[in-house]
Amino acid sequence: MAGLTTHVLDTANGKPAQGIFVQLFREIEAIAIAQAVTNADGRCDEPLLTAEQMQQGAYRLEFAVAGYFRGQGMTLPDPPFLDKIAIQFGIAETATHYHVPLLVSPYGYSTYRGS
Image: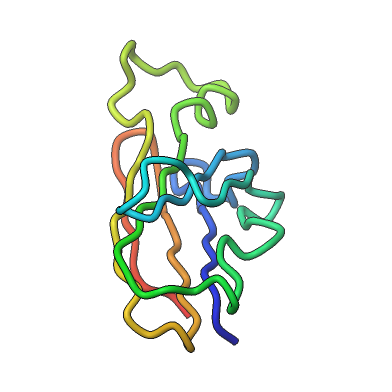
């Protein structure tokens, strides 16, 4: 199954990160081509790109994490250390599935190509 999906895990609180605003940009375009808000599982309800929308190229996912952590009752400095996290990645094979997870806390994050 081809397409692009993501999910976010809150490593500071040990749970899926519900309510994070996510935008997808194709690097050659200045406007978002997809957007979503993570659900109770920390996932988007629909793929950010379907199999039919997959194109080779450079992409950027942006996750609005500061608002999420403030909503969890955390006091963050102004400006926060991490406000929006941008992950730049490439899609080379349009017939395969790309999954880009984000593991995040207010002061650090990691990502990888998931399955």
